[in-house]
Amino acid sequence: MISIFMYMDHPESQYLNLIKDVLENGSIETGRNGITKSIFGYSMRFSLKDGCVPLLTTKRVAWKTCFNELIWFINGCTDNQKLLDKNVHIWDANSTREFLDSRGLQKNEINDLGPVYGHQWRHFNAEYDDCHTDYTGKGIDQLQNIINSLKDPEQRTSRRLVLSAWNPCQISEMALPPCHVLMQFYVRENKYLSCSLYQRSGDIGLGIPFNIASYSFLTHIIANHCGLIADEFVHFIGNAHIYEDHYDSLKIQIEREPLEFPCMKIINTHNNINDYSIDDIQWTKKYVHHEPIKMNLSA
Image (cartoon, rainbow, N blue to C red):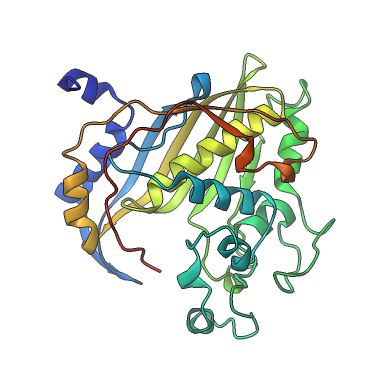
């Protein structure tokens, strides 16, 4: 049994306290896809030292799904079929004919999500044709630019290591505008790498646990790739909300006591950031968690 002191001191308590705050004090709003309770402005900090990965333990987080989506982002892909091939179904509801048509994307074939995250990370503002087009050399490769700076000891302390997924010029072409919109990297003592994320909109029940895990994985990958040591992930959320049909599930979750976070190491260093895969992860401390909690995904 974990003592009350240990529970309060556990980094996951930041997330549990967010749930409590929104359930108790959130403003009830009716939005695009249902009724929510929400607050505006919340932040959390998670240590990544010694390979720590802040995978929530008060429920099971589908970390393989999360990691495979991250690799999809890194590769600049916008084709949902590539995720389906990995048994990842996060984007299914947003890639149907009906949904794409509702966004005015009649020209997009089913599963073509438009210039979403991966396109902006690797080919920012390149004119978008379809998800099969080779965009090599087109647009701005924000991720590679950051990697190049992090590999240079004279540039890695720059305050301009910023990557934006928010591109007003192309939002109307996207199946969904990005929720996690801006990341920044920071190096201290010339070796410790941290990442902060600003997220304009956060689904606390389903989205936020994935976002914490995804950007923590990303920080570990980038640190390994650039010869640095992962240090910390800092998460800023604008509109933090809970969907009405998640209330009861999250009331169960906040009664659970957090367990120790798992730890990992990346066993390979590739020359190209595109070449990392789930096979490069080795867990050094097992992911132990409470039972899964079922919640529906809002499109």
